[in-house]
Image 1 (cartoon, helix red, strand yellow):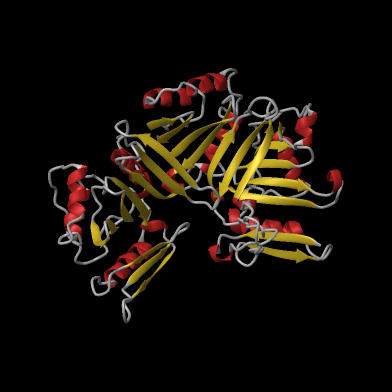
Image 2 (tube, one colour):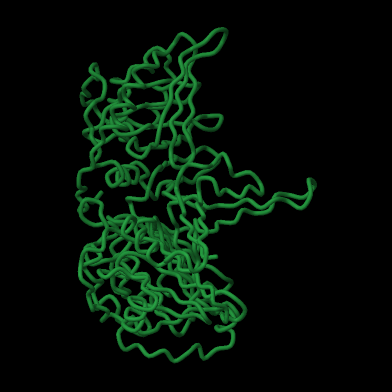
Amino acid sequence: DSELTLFLNLPDKDNRAEGFPRNSRTRCKIDFRDGNADLFAVQRFFSDKVLGVDSVEHSLYADGMTGHHDSGSDSFLAWLGDDNRLIDASEADAKFHSDPPILQNCETVEMAFRGRRDMMLFTGKRVIFVDVQGFLGMGKKVEYISVPWTTVTAFSARTAGSWIDNDSEMCLWLDFDDVFNPIRGSQDDPPPPPIPRRSWLEIDFQKDKVDMFMIHRYLSERCMRVSAHNLKSYSIPVSSELLRPTPPGTGEDLVNWLGNNAVSIDDKEADSKFHEAGILQEDEHVAFAFKTGRDSLYLTNKRLFVVDTQGVTGKRKEYMSVPWDSIRVWSVESAGNFDLDMEMRCWFKGFWDNKVKQDLRSGRADIIAIQQYIAHFVIGNANGIAALKYAQSVSSMPAGSMDKFLSYVTNDAIVKDPQAISEKLHTSPRILQEDETLESAYKCGRDLFLFSTKRIIEIDVKGITGKSVEYKSYPLRYNKAFKIETEGHLLNGPGVKVYTEDENIDQNFAKGSSDIWPLHQILSKKLLDEVHVEIDDDIRF
């Protein structure tokens, strides 16, 4: 039989039990009797539905990697490991437009790779994996897996290391939940580690056959959103300049610079180094740069950029990019009395290892400025108009200190006044944006649970002294659904639950102390009527 498999992103976290096949919502598999169905016609149908209707005549553009001669793997280890090598894109383009007809007429292969028996194609619309199955690839069965660029939420390029670790890798984080939890051997065994399956893809490249900096440049062009939060149009090819080989010594110079054990990194120097290596786009600049041990993190006007140094020698580097459009939750945490480091955390759209965490040395980083910078790109274009008719305007007040704010939130008499808290969070510390106000505020022990015109904010006061404070933001525009519960008998108070793409927000309130219906009005207005507006990416702090 022939088969069609659709990978879905319907919420299905409840079915992540051990051994559960997870085929009810995350995968849809259909069998076709061999000879009784035109599987390529079915493939073209779904290509039109998922990638866009094929209404343009075929373009012969495949100049980027035209004429690249395939010299074979030249390495038994590379052949054994099925490492991919670069091949002629124009030949692959011609082949997969006709035999078999996988590509749309308007679709062009821009880069092509071949492993021991399989192939991988980069087109203007998707990545296509050609998996030849059967013993030594001699079987008749072939699987064609299409991953649209629109499903890629983060990506990384990993350079080769020393000794036996001699291959490079590309990693893609996808926006559908295909994680599988294997069943344990016996009840006494610990649970086996989960398997990402199609939620996270890792592709091996042969070290001396593929330029990983070129791969990273290509992925930046295809996976980073441009005007109005849309991807680059498939009809606009990736510039041949970006597909030229990286100058010799570029990677080594960058590795040497990254290996410098300086505590802090100058953002202008980092900007210059990454542009020299061709990693950043022409209109991209570094605004913040941090280093912890051998690793470093950079905030640009387009992405979070993480450099992870791996291996004993540190020669192996992973360059991971998380576009701002993929960020779904973020938090910053001030230093405490015993834990002297501050922290920044970002959760991006995905279901496998989708958190970026960075420790920041106290006194060497402004976490409030970092919070403002992230907020600008994640919610800066969100509608800041109040959802409640009685929402109060915010008046300015002199800037104070963090200590004044901490003493303020412990005052039960005024903590539920959203206008007063708005005034505090516009100045001391400056968490809210200029066009952002609070509409509802709730105190839970020492902590605060806030609804602004753009996001839900959890302020978590930690430690015995309460000096360490975490400010966690959930943009309202990315929430999926919500429910509210009115108070019941006995001690049951009202509550609200907001369903997000990752961890849900579940908050209960004291009986008789909270009116739950304003929250319903806020969530209804913001989740149903939110309109995206273009972000100005030329901001600096």
